[in-house]
Amino acid sequence: MADTKKSNPTPPQGASFVVGQADFTSDFAEQLTIEFSGRVPEDRIQSWPMVYILTNRDEAYVGQTTSLSRRIAQHGDNPEKRRFETVNAVYNPEFNASVALDYEHRLIDLMQGDGRFFLTNRNAGQAPTNYYSRDAYASMFDELWNELRDLELVKNSIYEIEQTEAFKFSPFKVLNTDQESAMQSILAAISERLKSADATTTTPIVVQGMPGTGKTVLAIALLKTLKDLAASQDEEHAEFKGINVRLLEPITGLRMTIQKALAKTVNLSKDDIIGPNDLAKPEFGYKPGKKGFDVVLVDESHKLGMRKNLTPRQYGFYDDVTQALGLPQASPQIDWVLNQVRVPIFFYDPLQIIGPKSIGVHLIEDRLGECVKSPIELRSQMRVKGGNDYLEYMQQLLFDQKPSPRRFEDYDLVLHTDFAEFNDCFETTLEQHSLTRMVAGYAWKWKTKGSKNPDDFDICLDGVKKRWNRTFRDWVGKGMDNADIAREVGCIHSIQGYDLSHAFVIIGNDLRYSTIANKLYADKGSYFDINGKRTASDEELETYLRNIYYVLLTRGIEATHVYVCDPCLRNYLSQLMRVV
Image (tube, rainbow, N blue to C red; front, side, top):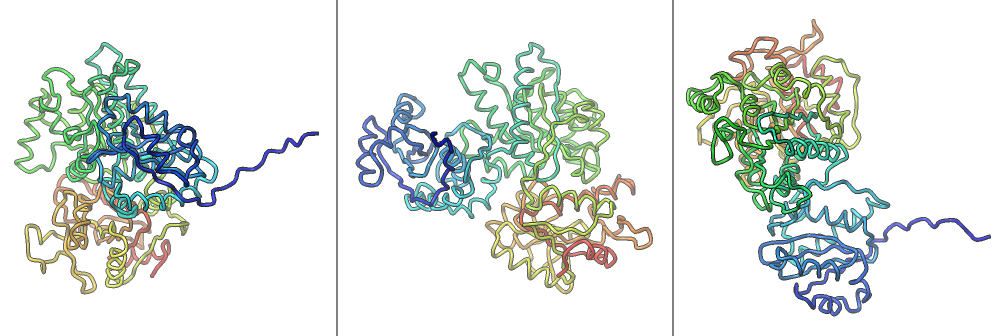
């Protein structure tokens, strides 16, 4: 009887990569054959999984194929590809088709963040891949990247790239299963809506997720995909052709960061990322009495504002918009979106509403109705290595749900009892991880506002003097290039929407613990964000403060370090965190 047993697949042994280069001409295959001579079997150019990079002086295109000769010939017939000058082919004897696809995704994502070339790829929001020995192949990727650096096809190390905002906000991120499912559902809903002749109805969609579930990543991937479809000549997706699609980012600093991160992305421009006021500007698509925007992706939609606690100058800008849109003067910004957009997509987290200037849960529910009651949900944690368990633990801790003490695999949650030691630990960590920042609740007055004297300070704890962030706009990113900024203490307005490698969180006296009631409470007298409390009731302020610290305590990817000012709260948290 014949042996019917199947042999088990063999894991990779770490074979070396071979990178061959040839002119992007009709005889490139002959050139590569010579380039590969003695290192790669001759038939592999015709039939073998490979990754390749087409380049000219300023642009690059990354692809993968099982037949390099046939694929490059196809590119040669494509007018868009003829401007490339060089074929850079990556061979490895242990490649298979799944590995080549995975490496293509990884190269696109990293090269977008690297910035050496302007990437012309159009495959945003890539689907996840899984295959045998994926981790082993992933560990081999560093060797390939180093070879590409030697060839000057990339300029930065992987670690350096992963610390940049261009990488974090890349539209080429591989989406997890939640995000991929959400993207397909949203694209299908948009397609159906665009095929309708009715240009007056608004069809909102709500995407809800906790911090770190990739709401902004999904929004950016959707923007890139929709912009590519809008520019496409593909008749199969004709309904998308020429549509006006924008990403609305209410947080000014984050908007500027995303604009900068997407600067070298085909089919995207700075004007594709807008603020709320831009909904009333003709240059972006505003049309009086009509819906001038087909699709708007509203990131951090819980930060959409209301006509509350504004400066006199801000009132003027606000009123100009409501007047242009023909809305009542007090209309919240969510009404601006619903007034101007056929398909608005709201990315939302109710626990990140941090002050009375933002629209509240009740207003969102009133305006969006069933959409917010049955949202598309993102559940998988992408930021914090402690996972969803860590986020739920922080929620239980801050909202008096009396959690049992926990530890988290691959994640460090540490309570420091001495601020000088806390600050020393911060300094050491910052030297090793450039995306480390110290953040705090607004429990100290901003005395240094406008001061250029480096000796001025706002916070003094255990004799250590610190100052608030000098800017709200891209404070995290500016700290990458300026050590003084990196050593400032960021408030909630400078950090919401951003990731940190290690977060050092100061819980000020604005949040305390009652040993009598056995619960947390807000100390209004120790909270100094004037606009954050001016029209808030005591109950609302307590909710805002709990939400603020929830945001601060869920920024850190690798670890969260905590220092607590209130002795009673410090003692309570010492039972729930590792103490040093």
